[in-house]
Length: 77
Image 1: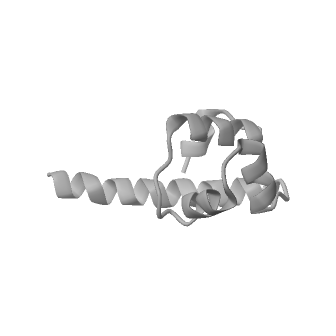
Image 2: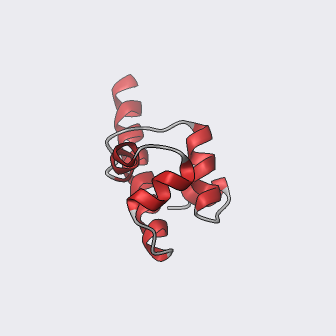
């Protein structure tokens, strides 16, 4: 069961990253601009967008605010 949960987490992280990319591009933000607004490094934002790293709830909340969305909208795949 633990293995299945891990695979689901990987899928969730990938979908979350794709959602961030989509919303960022809709607002015509570069990665650098969004990372600055969220107070994270560009490399960390890049890793989130590529779905290779998980993020914290507080970072997700700051991403939502910078993208003018509520937190739940970031998980609306």
